[in-house]
Amino acid sequence: MSENLPALEDLLADHDMLLAALETPALWSREVADALPDSPITSVSVRPVGTGQVASCLRVVLDHGDAATPNTAGSTTSFVVKTGSHDPVSRSVSAALRHGEIEVGFYTRMAPHCSTRTPVCHLSAINANADDFVLVLEDLAAHEQADQIRGMSLEHTEQALDQLAALHAQWWGTVPSGTSSFGAG
Image 1 (cartoon, helix red, strand yellow):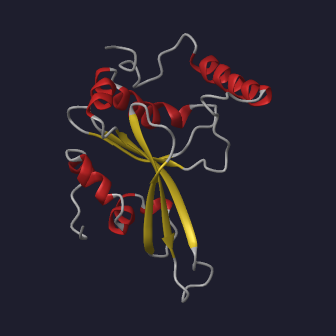
Image 2 (tube, rainbow, N blue to C red; image 1 turned 60 degrees about the vertical axis):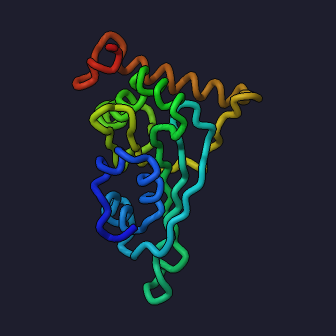
């Protein structure tokens, strides 16, 4: 792909084109420049992360910097990119449940006001049919992900429940501005 990439919203019309665009430094330089150091992106690697029941999650690692710029050679920045599933059945289930619409809505309208820690959303878009979306989120790779089969320790369970309770307590009995459509359907 060249420097003449379509707008991100247009890339959502073609899932394969979106996936190909994710591997181009030009997309990242244009779309998330405010989250990147000033050094140029020298390479991009994309690999699956998570299990992706109704969406695809990818870890994108951007290498940037060069030997001529102090403290930049070998620097990396990573993001998690969540998109609609490539699988047509999963994609239709996700669309029927308004998964992308609700998740994009949460990260753009609700997460900035949450008292609990949520990943920073650097970029979001959803197509007109609401059957494909993209979220570019802070990568929380340094944190431990729960195993869906083995479960998690009592300590991690207590921490998760404390955060869940805090999230619900903050909004209990209210409808946060701009979120009234989240539960409709």
